[in-house]
Length: 66
Image (cartoon, rainbow, N blue to C red; front, side, top):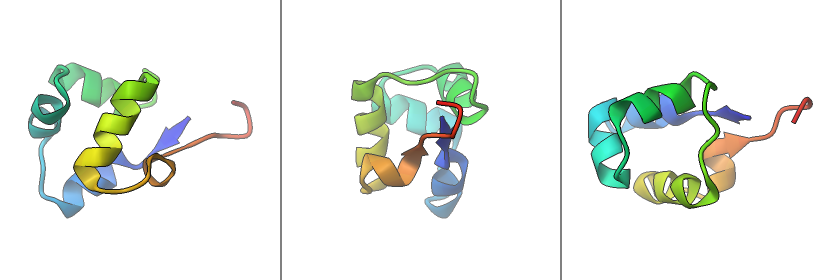
């Protein structure tokens, strides 16, 4: 699964730590999601999308291999 969390954070000038606090996870979790090492739960995906005020499909997308 691909995501554009890093781009969305940059637009809002938000750190990984700030996003992590807003969605109640660790900074390391945000880092792992951004790097594609961790696929977030549906609930966490929705929380992240809500922070960016965008549909979840604009933050996360499936790859051909998914």
